[in-house]
Length: 315
Image 1 (tube, rainbow, N blue to C red):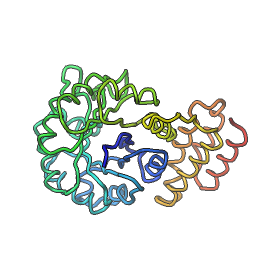
Image 2: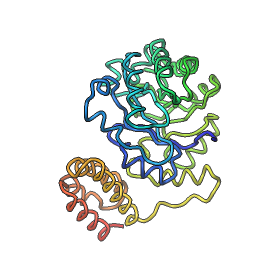
Image 3: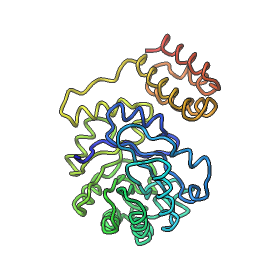
Image 4: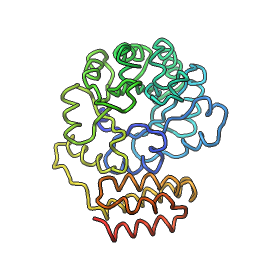
């Protein structure tokens, strides 16, 4: 099988079964679950287990986070049993203080030897590939993605994805693509470029500039799964399609809602539809008129009605 080129990044509260399904249909080669706490999974937390309940068609990975090799190994085994995923991804990139401040996510970039030990434990625990998502480093004085990439490769990782910002940057400023190029030159496993890949042109440029094996799309895909179709066409050297009219985009939003409805039930699906519908309307003139209504939807009938009005009134 050829190396996948186009990956949907794991994002908490976003890459659920519904959105992963839509992204895969639009052209993503690989999708990844929301991050799952290794300890919560090992302790049998029902909400955590639910995150792994369904896998869409295509290649799908499951991402776990934690800082204890034993818990991570146990969680990887459980993840494989619960999700039947194609690979396990280890989160070494989440910059949120609650995660990184506890030594998880990007916090592992401060302890590279422990990070490598975790990879080794997970690789030994499961029969599927193990990958790592990381950042440029902790801050501008501690940029160590190249060192960490070498260590996790030696520990058995099958691929790495590098976000070109430090943990301290969060999502501010521009992503540094030079560090991704350096990682690509430092290791022999596939490297995926992440950060500011927000258009077909950006995707082609970052691949040429860094030599990366593929791109990983994150926040740019909020409410815009069509970005995958556009980048897919660019990668395949085909004519890049335009985004469809708003009416068709809202049909996609409604399909995403219906998948979530089936997976999570009406209450949760409606709560989550509030943010997803707003994302689908990003940049649409006069869309703010509907955001109050969207923020209050509580039943599936209310979701259908607000989408119907949007399709009638906006372009």
